[in-house]
Image (tube, rainbow, N blue to C red; front, side):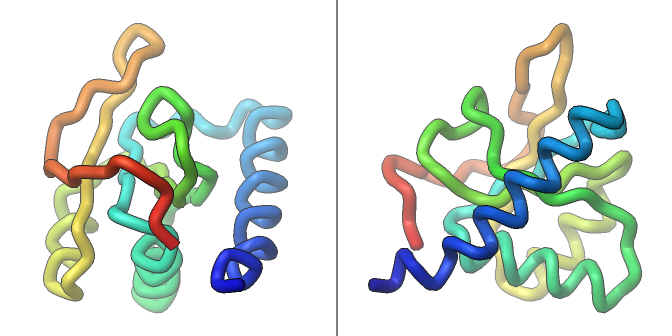
Length: 114
C-alpha cells in the first residue's frame, strides 16, 4: 500500500517531464539522483522553501532504470551542501554526448525503494 502514496507524485513528475521535452526547456546539465522517492520529494520541498531554481522529473532510465526523483539544475555544488546538511544522500550526473557521467556521490541502488 505504501506504493500508492507516491502515485500522484509520479504522475506529476512524468507530466512535467513531457512538458519540458515538448518545450525543449530541459537544458540544464546536472541531474541529482537520490536513494529513494521520499528523499527526492524531501529535496524538492527543501529547495522550494529556499527559492532555489530547479526542475524535477522522473530519474532518467540511463541513470537508474527502476524509479525515483531527479532534480535538474544548472549548478549543483551549493545544492549538494544544502541537501546533505539535511541528511539527504545525493548522486550528481552530468550529461556529456548524450550519456550521464557520475561526478559526485555513490548511492548503492539495486531496486526501487519507496
